[in-house]
Image 1 (cartoon, one colour):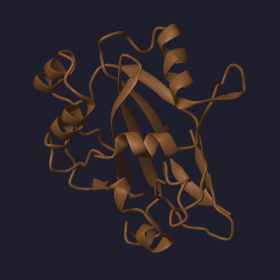
Image 2 (tube, rainbow, N blue to C red; image 1 turned 60 degrees about the vertical axis):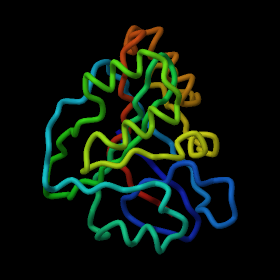
Image 3 (tube, rainbow, N blue to C red; image 1 turned 45 degrees about the vertical axis):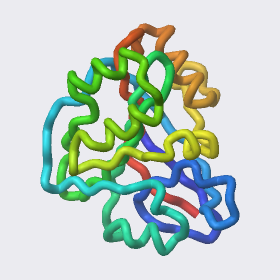
Image 4 (cartoon, one colour; image 1 turned 120 degrees about the vertical axis):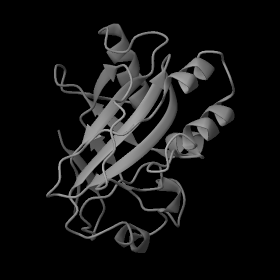
Length: 192
């Protein structure tokens, strides 16, 4: 799967730009993504090679350069979805010579709290505290409101929104009611 992020006269390899399309100081970008959804939790695995990127810190091309070497070419975006609602988001930059290992997104205790209907703000803060090697995005709602993300359906060939992709996955039995699901975007690179 490939993610193409198009920005005129700018070629920066491998970072994520999501949701910064509205303001003047933000990068004008569009993510065209192939997404897959799978139910269940992320395995609790750790890797010293994992680098995290806080989306709130990306305001300019210079910020992108601070995220790591231009040789870094692997990226995964994961959206944690509960009952069709995005409850968390994080990104992982992967060194090209290393393989990606999943890291923990939600543990059983947090899952129990999520199903008890606590507020979005509380959920986000709880998720941020789970693991020091990842950062959940605190301003998730703002980012998703401004994001331009298209879901490319392999079967239909057309594009729908992230919300539609989640619903579509649900109808296919991929996203199960009451369980967090993962919507993944793999292998990101920027093109002119």
